[in-house]
Length: 282
Image 1 (cartoon, rainbow, N blue to C red):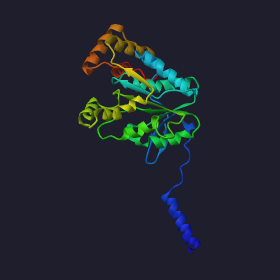
Image 2: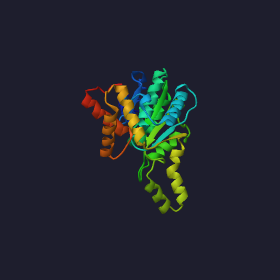
Image 3: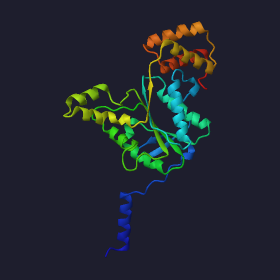
Image 4: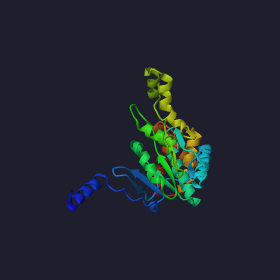
């Protein structure tokens, strides 16, 4: 029969092999967190990088739809997972962060949790972490997309509305992507051309986006919309510049960049603020 000393050594070895479950994270430290793995943890964010929702010009319908969905969820009502897709730099991620900010202004206890696309295979563990916590959590993945031989989409697909447990009632997922179906067109076409059953292969790849209850599309802006964005920023930041001078500079700026978007508008305003000695603080 093993001695007491032997039993103690066996027990210690078993503890090292199966470490105790870590304590639940303290989510009272912040209103926003970033999910990291190895080890799994929620890192609090001291200050969220976002702009007021009133400065997001030209996306009124998407703004109103996302705000209403966010309010419903924050109030404990049914709400949908949301995919914000479309043109680069048109305010998809800015709108998510601004909608969370509006919920905070309205005194809703809603936490923003960002997860990187590269760590999507850990989303099941993240949901299990959030499942038993007090409060409501807006899970956010920016620039979500999948490439060839990328199996991460299966992890996300299983937790959106599949599996036995499903998505916790206190968690919702907002994702942004340049791709409507989260996968490159040539990837979908390759599946269609090489599979034994093309329709089933394509269905497997694109069905992930169907699990988002709301799709909000973002499209490239025209010149008037581009100038309206810049004027809105200048007004909010109290940047004094003549309308004709602003128009000429802004058009030249977008021509050198070869595109018009909210991101390009903000880059011009950043340059203008630096020249005018204005602090970028709303």
